[in-house]
Length: 264
Image 1 (cartoon, rainbow, N blue to C red):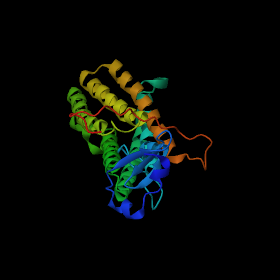
Image 2: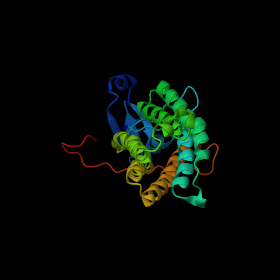
Image 3: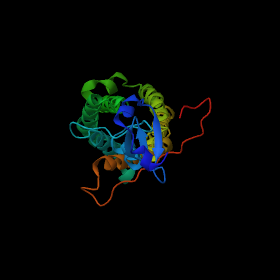
Image 4: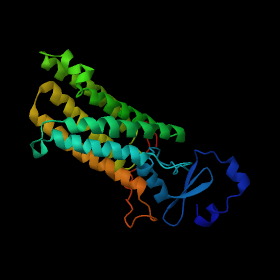
């Protein structure tokens, strides 16, 4: 289909084209037609990062208010970075008290609010992810606050507490794996963020149940890398040609050959 012919679609025929129909046009197939509307391929690719969309051909949503995804990504990325450095043993810090404040006010509140706003915008993946991890940071914060009584409940049974925390993290391992499966049609950075997060929780869960310090350190290192990936996505949602000389590039994942086991 040529570029000239694609631009001459009559309005009557546009209304009859199903939204699910996708066509390519242009000299190098740089344009994509979805439901009779023409988008530049790069615009669609950028939607994966800054707007937290996972659909392969999802056009950038039209926001009635500011894009909430960068807020959630910043809250998650910065807090995960600090926590990862703590687990990795950076500067020999062993007291995680600073994490409590970040988890209670920045990570949990920022993520949950971003999730609610994404729900209003109709982005199911982002709203589920942000709200869930906002609740995770609230729950994680309670482990370090004596008034919740969690540590006191396991007084004298520290091994049980470590195993219980390991089970708590193991549940998130399963949930994050589900999210990973939903990013296989996005970009490498988007997929990498969730894949590395999955590895992080596996390592931290194993560290709690095994008591191995080296596994804790490995989990912290992977958490730091995960945080950097998340902050890259945050930057992709903030930066544009109007406010920055540097606009993050999208790295779309390859499209596999269609077979009876795959839905492309």
